[in-house]
Image 1 (cartoon, rainbow, N blue to C red):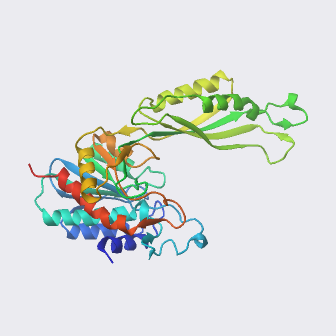
Image 2: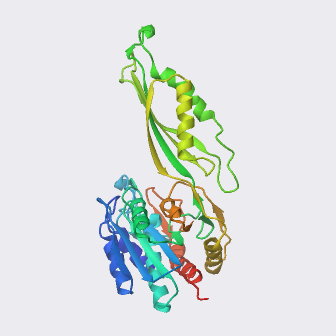
Length: 377
């Protein structure tokens, strides 16, 4: 069994369903402390965060990951128990194998190797782990980033180990992410009998034209780095369950994924203006999960390309697709952020897995990035 496979299995065995860490960070901390890293624990609320550093001064290269995982879903649907790692057909199976305990294990191995071979390296190399990436993401990296602002901790470059590959390690990296804005809309009407609509006010009927207008709107055309902004209704609820009652209230939850052409406030203003234009009696709650960010073609992107070419011989696609990541909290600190990790086809699914070939190559990839980013002049 390879070292990265062994550590990945140890992490998968820990049932760290968000926001639980279940001892994953203790395991990592013990290894890195033995390798000479300084360990700082940053617990906020029920969330555990780990900051491990080696070296001093600039530049600061941070590897970023999470030890929490999503729930397994129906255990009976898995071919093998989700928290009992199993290797079969050239793949490691288990919850978190791809998202992202395999990448965390690879980062640990790479960092141990890096400081062993160059203990007096320039700058600072660091690992930041949280147990709140798959959950609310309030007391995890979001809160750590706030702490870093308050204490003056800088990060110049950040490599996020999210699963970015489509078919094989190194074929795709993320150079940014879209912003995410969720609205929970309540539209008030007057409940009544369906046979007497003149005595009621159906909030569903009132809201549909406004929702149709929002769904049909072409918010922007996107650009070379970001796809067009999207508006999607995720949940809609009204009624008592009876077929002869006009509902008195409608609740609609929707989400927008947007690029840098929009701010969250500008979207809020545009949506609320549309709702008012349709004369709705409404209230709305907003949740801004994260703003869009983008890393230009600078040092980190060049280093990641070169490292991928060295390890896999591939030329990666560089895009901003997919959902959000904790990189959205690190980028505003002024850091370049690139996400690179294993294949994402099975993440959050039953029988989540990672190809052993990709897992075995990951430590070398992260090591190559560290060596190139913190190269001696």
